[in-house]
Amino acid sequence: MNVRLKSIAVAISLACSAGLAQAQNDQSSDLKQVSYVTPQKPEDISPLLNGEKIPVTQLPDVSGKIFDLNKAVSEKPTVLIFYRGGWCPYCSKQLSGLRQTAPELEKLGYQLIAVSTDAPEGLMESAKKESLTFTLLSDADLSFSKQFGLAYKAPMGYWETLLKSTHGKDIDLLLPVPSVYILDKKGVIQFEYINPDFKQRMNADLLKTVAATIKKDL
Image (cartoon, rainbow, N blue to C red; front, side, top):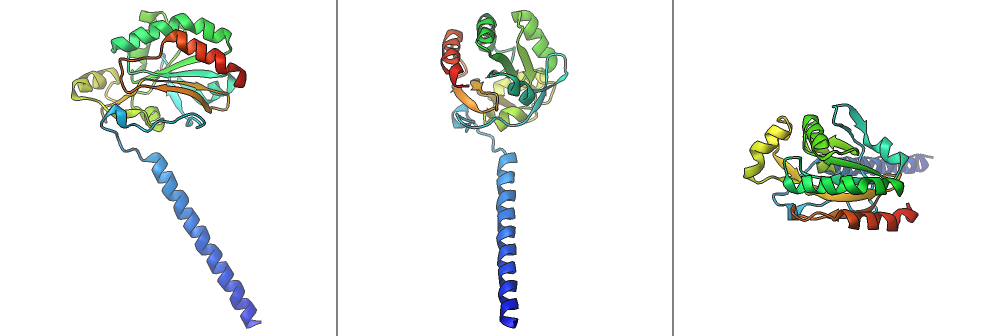
């Protein structure tokens, strides 16, 4: 009887130790997920890629109202754009191209959502200037860009602009690498275009072609 009780005690002890180790591993994994080591160059980012699921987030829109991105994504396939800000001429050109192709993307069954570092007031200014009708969201502190692995340390020449355009929320002085993602309704990435050279953007016509090609699989 004593031998049997001793065996049971050893088994319980081993199970507890294994459980503790697993908990420690889980905690370590969680810490890795929430920590973010800022890349110093856009070439050094480690972004989310095909097959990965987007993080849960809520961001303010042009009016400052909180927008549930994941809820919106669950309702229809999404073209998700990350751009630097309305102050960037390359971003303005990209937004203009997206404005022209947005109706065609919508006919294909997509919704178009663009995220930038601009505070809501800056988003509103861009929406009016470019006559945009699709959703613009503010990631002024770049918390969402960090979760996507897109944020990097901005060159010094951008610091003053970022502090002003984000209303001081970009305290780490970061920029996102401009990117294009296509998501299914589960929030899983089906396509991505990520270019460290901020002057190179995905052509709106190419985006439409890709979106049409993969739509049948969403």
